[in-house]
Image 1 (tube, rainbow, N blue to C red):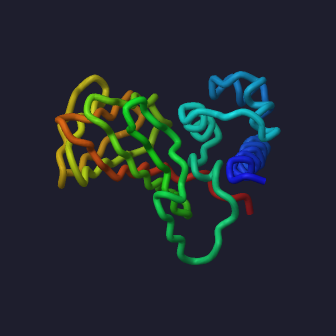
Image 2 (spheres, rainbow, N blue to C red):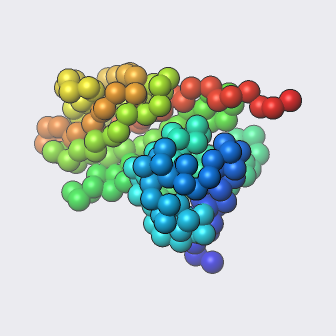
Length: 194
């Protein structure tokens, strides 16, 4: 089995399990996440290749992190993840990319992303569920962060934080590649059943 096949099987299992826990039919999950029933059926059969936006909508609708849909069981107390061991979840036409490095566990998980934005290339993100807070820490270059239509320049050595429930866009600015670490702070999930 290839790495891609294994990743699709893990994704299929995790989506089906999260949908079952949420008590949602394929039709209802599709309606809420704005994903066709056919795409969901394929996804739960480990077929197809869902894009990043679809994964984000499914995770938001199911109340879980994107990596909770993609990761297998935890392997011990400490996880060390190399960027080259993680497939990009988004790749731009000019070489930009976003990699979900890991998600912390606990009642309020945090996703840790590594982004590369080429000058002028952008990624528009749909609003997340209420309570999501994002941070972007630029380590090299500069980016323009657009939140709810307002542009904010964020340069190397600067960090910005914002509520992720508004439309937002990440855009490479200047004439060099922008490297950044993004965190997505998810709201606490429902308490586990006793």
